[in-house]
Length: 392
Image 1 (cartoon, rainbow, N blue to C red):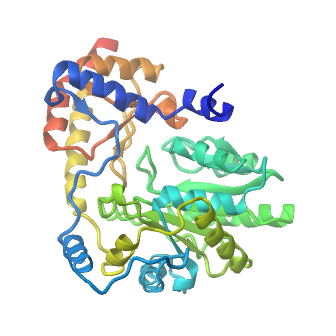
Image 2: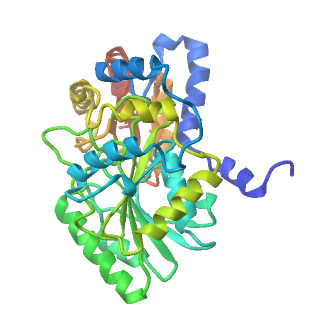
């Protein structure tokens, strides 16, 4: 074998998102890109705010800035600016010392997992889940354990509790959720924190709660993403500016550690180290300087809200069953066929590209990313209707 066995196995089970995207590339070559309605990738299409463009121009035009190595945790002034925003969101006295700048949320999650996992230990996450979580955990010798969610995709705390044992190192949640768009309530998170505290005491070891929050600012209908720091001491937030500022290619994000964590300094030191040895070294210098100038800024959420309303109206008129998302920019409708992969193939015949829910640990559903242009949504309407009528 020319490549590592575990990588070969991972390639076999690789992301359905990428598989469907690649198949879409073939369809676009055959039929023309303008005829294919592609809802596969969560690639933001709302432009960054004007404040970002100004900050970028100002920073790039400053001849006094240097490009030298820095602390692996990031620039102190950036960490302090980020801490101010996190402190407001988490109702907690977060300081710059509690922040580590990372290469996006993906980089942040790998930095955390490298720092906390021993070989064979587990991370528990509710289904459906972002598929890369499994590979991130495997990167560091761990195993991902999944627990089913309640109908409506809220956390099933009993199922999570049953999935936790002496090998559990962390519980990983994602709110607003990809792929469902669900936002977990403050009451649910409070009960989760109490359950984890009880489990940690009973096992004599701390179980971390990791909140992956790249969609925190993309919420609708006055929804609020609750704080977690006031609900559980051994908690971390990891996020990026990929979605809130439409900067996925810039790879900029951070990890915030709860200041109430008992062993905070040990964990911070470990993550500074893992940020370096994983090869990230530090988050991109230019983007650190830019985001330090615009804490709390985000894209025009109304654009995504409008796209959500239109796509929901189309699917509702066609007879699809779905829960209207409270956040993020995904719909996760129920498949009219029990075999969600087969239904996604049927949508392909209408030149509509979706991702099977099976790829997210949610069989029987399919995901639509509505961070697309309006024409894509409108052009897909006849295809959605034909596909559901063909299988009913």
